[in-house]
Image 1: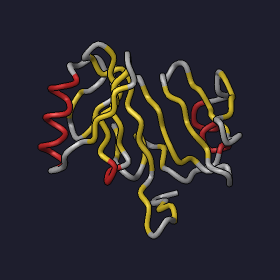
Image 2: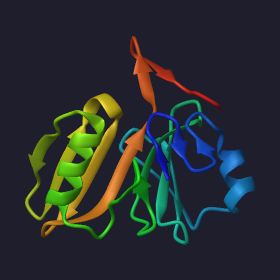
Image 3: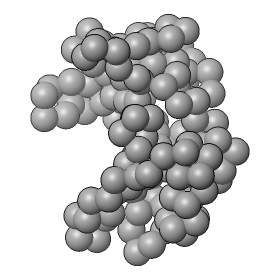
Image 4: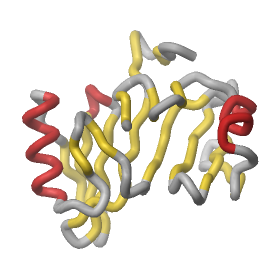
Length: 140
């Protein structure tokens, strides 16, 4: 379950890389983004954990079909249905960006992005909240 601004199930934003490794073992792949920040990929979870410059978890990219947000199943569902439900539950409108075969529906105030291909949700990305350009890490 996605806990907006907090994390995913028992994984809170702000935790260290070692915490993730203790909880889920070694990642299947370790990579870096364009800023040379660590990306820890776990195939079984179908999640990639993005670490910040202090090696704290700050962003999760997930394609796990069991993923739910606000009691809404999202992966594999029609994007129009998911975005309508989330807009209602979050009382917020989304921002849309078209990347060709991939479309993005983001709720910036919730640090939440829904990615779809061919009208079906494939991936959800979400992160911690911010306060005056400083990350808010609750429960970490």
